[in-house]
Image: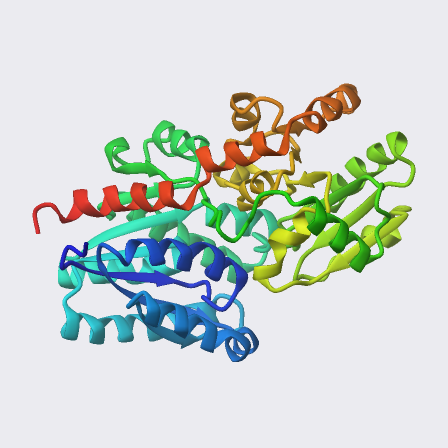
Length: 398
């Protein structure tokens, strides 16, 4: 039952992108039962053309008011600040008409607007940091030697400090990230909440052998082959070397092993850097990913190593578990190490020496057990309730 409170949610990620559709909108569909939701998002031209109608239908069904803004691609950084100006102008108009009580900002770019709205209209501001965004950029994209990027880094470090200080609530994806924020005394520990990335388990169904066989046949993958699978984004934040290391180790055990990549991004470096044997790459609509995961035997979690990985909560792990697929990861990614310990034989932290024995253990884990792990830790309903608790606490004295 709706409380009568209005929430503005700002996302720099588009709802017509897989991440926005799978993560942001799934949460908001659940939260819309309790609050009136206004949603501002930045939409890229081609996905918006393809999926605008689908997103509008979802929003209309849930009475979510969606206000898409055109995403500006270039020049880097400056284009983002231009988009933020557009969002800020739109948010002012929405406040004058609807007087929302709280602004929930997904990551750093959106939080530039949240900070402004908090100061101007005294609305509650949630800094949903997701991860250590500035550090991710420095580790993978922003060159500190470039004077332009040095300025950009200084600018966002100052804003980051304000987000930590001024936000009425902070959301991190992992206990590891929360510990970093607390240990560095960046913010009041009482303001920090951990909400792991969640998965809509209605979209990622239980393992179905028939679907597995159908997908393998469609892709030309042998029915009995061992399939190492990777699903998700693939860019500068990801480590091709780790994929090849694991794949070549698997091939020592299963010489006919296949590597299946499900990604909308171009995957480079696999063919030319090593003998990948049977490599299959495919770009899919979000709705078809779940069925294709069932074609795999082990699911890769892969990020380039750096400080920022402490804030990573891989959505793909929940999707893997939901469809009966154990995971494999390098050490130190968010809470993954502790999750593999907590949920017995659910995944492997890669170690060359123990790999074969570890693989044997996770392969013996029943797929229904893995599904249960997903329901326990990654369920969308759990995430909605965690966010609802944060909202209600902030709105209590409204």
